[in-house]
Structures are given as C-alpha cells and as structure tokens.
Length: 117
Image 1: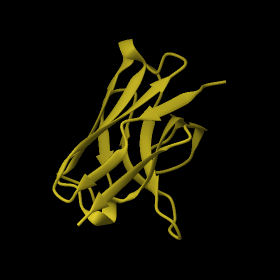
Image 2: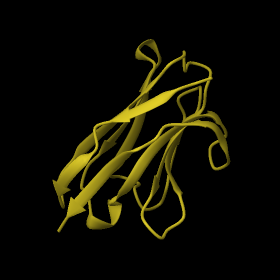
Image 3: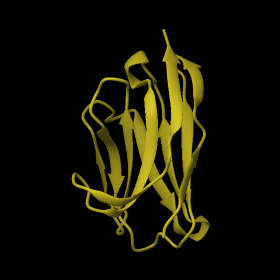
C-alpha cells in the first residue's frame, strides 16, 4: 500500500506563492504522479501531472503559474504555485500510479490552500 502525505498548504493573499510537497512511502521513480484540487461544490480537477519520464501536463487554469516537479531520491512530489488567485482556493491532493488525465490508484488526504483577495 502506497501512502502519500501532503504539506505546505496555508493562507496567502492574491498574487502570493506557496509550495506544496507530497512525500510517498515508497519509491516514486516509476510512477506517474499528479496534483488535483477540489473546492466545495465543484468537481475534482487535475491541476498538473508528471509522468515517470518527467514530462509535464498542466490544466489550462494554472498554465504559466504552477510548476510540478519531483525528486525521486526524496520520494517527493512538489507543486510550486505562483501568482495565486482567489479561485485557486481548494483542497489540494497528490496522486500516484495512474495516467495523466485519467485515474490514479493512490491518494493523499490533501492540504488546504486559501487565497484571499
């Protein structure tokens, strides 16, 4: 069983930055991994995805502002979020072992990001 633990969420003013981290209980070198977010009353949205080769895909709403990366040696996935907007407010979760744009097998519990105007 793969365990994923997110950290780095918090409250920030619009225009600010946050860096989310997700640490896995196993090696992530062969996994595709992604960040998702969900705000109350909305559907879960795939924010960014990185495959096992390091190729990245971003949702249209975050392109140019967010950067996904991973450090396999540290078993960690990151999401650098710049230029935050109030509409970025959501619970952010990381996921592993799946396909970008599709489903994933393992999920973290999430970390809350709140952006005030």
